Structure formats: C-alpha cells, structure tokens
Image (tube, rainbow, N blue to C red):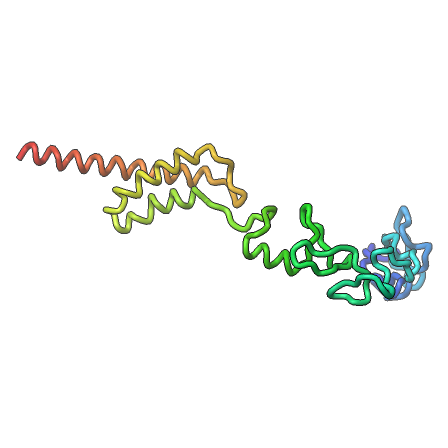
Length: 205
C-alpha cells in the first residue's frame, strides 16, 4: 500500500487522488478507515463535505430570488429582490448587501462612513490608555526636568485615580501604571528634597 496522503482539493464536483490526479469513485469518500486509489493504489483518506453530494442547481430562497415586475430591487443588484432598506441612507438592500448591525439594518457604505465619523454607538473606534498618559507625563518631561514639577503630581494623581479601572482591551496596563506611579513619586520626592535643601541653605546663610 502506498504512503498515506490527505485529499484536499475538489474540482468540478469530483475529488482527485493527490498522487496520480485520477478521479476517485464515490465509495472512497468518508470511509471509516484508510482506503486506496483504484488507479495508483496510493493510500488515501478522502474526507469530503456533504455539499459535494448536493445537486449543483439549488432553488434560491425567497429573499434571493430574482425580482419580478413591480417589486423593489436592490440598489447595487437591480436583478435581485430587496429584503430591507438601510436605516441611514434608505437604499434598498438584497440579502447580499444587507447587514444586521446591532438592531439596525445597514449597508456597507453607511457602516464604513459612520464608523469613520464615530456615529455608531455599538463601535469602539478609540480607547483612552491612561497608563500611557501617566507614564508619558512622568518620563517625557525628564528631558526638560523642570516640567516634572507640574507633570509628576498629575501623573501620580492619574495613577492612583485610574488604578482600579478595568484593564484596557488593548492589553493589561497595571505594569505601566505602576511604573508611572513609581517614577512620578520619585520625581516628587526629588523636588521636595531639592526644595528642602534650598530652604535649609537659605536658613543657614
């Protein structure tokens, strides 16, 4: 018996042996165990979907049927019967164009434009990442250290205020939030130490 091969391609409603490309008979499909190709005797296991057994001509469902005179037709496919109207632009839609978006019947154009303009409440186009804001406020001003006098308290406040907020859908943020907390706290301590040093220096002089 030949080497085991997986039959993966189906063309023209017939499966072919992957070794010799000969058409396989119907009795070789979906067998419980390994079988052989009648032409080359290669070991095969032909598993096919039930759709292979269906006739090629399938009666269309009522919403897919061609429109008759007097019926509403799809805006993009004039030969197809309309099954709904877009609730934003009013275009008639067939089953191919119709999209049930939440509780609305919409077309693809309106979904695209409304998502871009942030008009659909069921879409999430942007997400505020407070961990990024806190860490940026704590770290970036180090390039201009005097700014940390203002940004460090803000970063510390955000770190404490948003610590128990749900994790972002873009990834866990507790590590970055903790880093922002530590860095901003160190900056505040440094400024307090600097202020104390200046104060004591003036007292002593």
